[in-house]
Image (cartoon, rainbow, N blue to C red; front, top):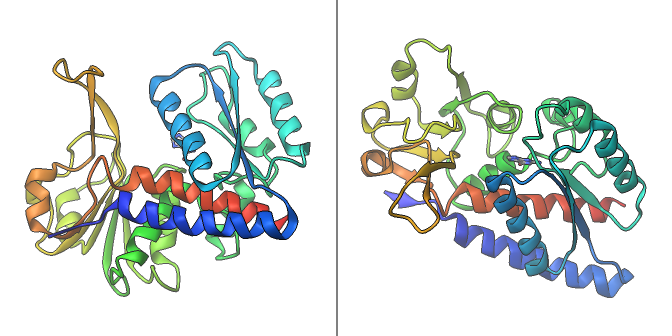
Length: 290
Ligand code: GUN
């Protein structure tokens, strides 16, 4: 069993980005800039956004964090987005999800300029992804693709099961794994809460991408020997013993599953770090596209 080390790979990619940023600065005096809008003060979202801002500093990007209170109206948020759409200094931006319930997430996603939509959530970018056209690939699936590529994991002709069908991870991931090219050319099965005979599907899988958000869902007896397992889950589970009062749990029962795998990504230290780094890659692309 070998670990797919998200920390190692994201550090390598961040160094590559930092070198490119230096070249861009020398060539045209510009610094790529990522902005993030955070509405409310959800603990997990705070952590993600802080990590995005810190990573920007590490590679020499500028960043802007726009905090808005949890009672922000949809109109107020749309106004802030329009400002970012029109601000020439901003190359790309994200609106951290989830949003408070009174705000329609789709209205927000669709108001982001497609050239600055570095999350790749706008239906136009998602449509381009489906058709194999150049687009921003959503950061988590992009990070997984990078991990598979950098570890030279064989994908052609393999059975890939994607657990979960969210717009952010499961659905784009399934499209990417079935597309022509590398990584890709898999036979993909998407499983979700209504799937029957889940274990039958899983036991045929050469590659499993677990993105359900259910801590330790995937057990040892659901995985065939030699499988590649990617754990996308990152749920806060209460733990009195820990200083923070919680521990992060993946969707995979690591101790049971790892001994059966050829490769496995851990939590923490796997996909999470790759997600942030992929957002930087998309921002660099946005800056270069300008
Ligand atoms: N919430 C959880 N993951 C993401 C992500 O990749 N982007 C945004 N904007 N919000 C998220």
